[in-house]
Every structure is written in structure tokens, then in C-alpha cells.
Length: 175
Image (cartoon, rainbow, N blue to C red; front, side):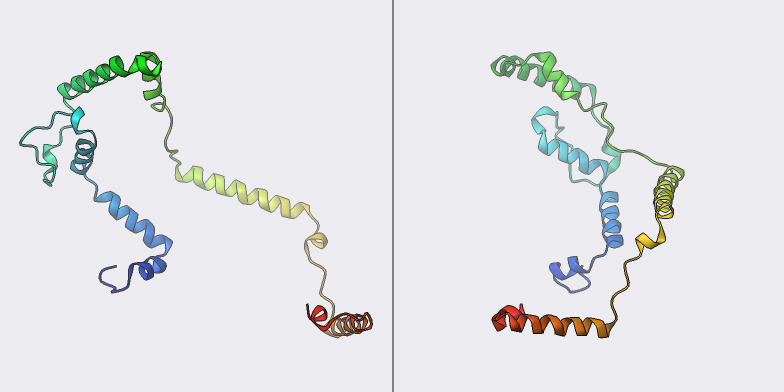
């Protein structure tokens, strides 16, 4: 976009589907574990022990180790404190809260299909379409042929003559 010299609007209008998918792939590849860690720390900083020497902006991926045991213990302590202080106010039991938190854990978020599965599903769609086309008669599928041009002109002239005899306003005839 920067190299083309176009404005943002013109650039977006010129992007096709293949280019959009390619740009999305490039953006996804640019996300590192360090970036994800930084997002979690900025969003939920109070729930995590942030080390003084931890530099979020560093590009060194070897520093990323995930959550330590102390991080988990601290997060559980924060959770228990929240439940104790706010759980009774809301009239919700601890079991209900835990069920709500874990409700989506078993939900599939994506379906992975092999090439063979994709081909079979597409083939079945097209074969069903071909079967429906072969069961109908050819005569019912084909639209009737249009009238010859001379017949259409003659019919149009007759319709105009009839409208003129009906004392219809010129504007109505043109409509």
C-alpha cells in the first residue's frame, strides 16, 4: 500500500480475495509468543507476577516460558478472593461460576477436513445437482422461444392504438 502511492480507499478497492488472504496470513505469521504474552500482561496485569527485568517489547522469544506455578497459584488466589467477596452479592454459587468459566472448554472451535473429505463433500453436491437436472424433462427447463420481432412490433402498435382510443393521458401512455 505504501509503495503504490494510492490512498487507503483506492487500495482497499483494488485488493482481491487472494491478496486479502495472503495479507491475513502474513499478519498471522508476524504474531509471536512474546506479543501474545504482552497482550495478556497488559490486559490482566494485576493477575500476573510481572518481573522487573521482563521487557515486553524485546524480540527475544527464548524468554517466553508460559505460566509458572506461582502464576497459577496467584491467579487462583485472586479468583477465590473475588468469589468470596462478590459471589454472595450476585446470588451465584461457586459451582455455577466454575461451570460458566469452563462451559466452552469442550466446544470445538474448528473442524479440520482432509483433502479427501473436502473432495467428497463437493462431489456429492454436484452429483445431487446433476441427478436433479437429469430427472426433469428438457422441455420444462427451456424457456419458451420469444415471439418474432415483426409479431412483437405489430402487437405493440395495436396496444398503442387501443390506449389512444381510451382517452388516456399521454403521460400515462408513456408509463
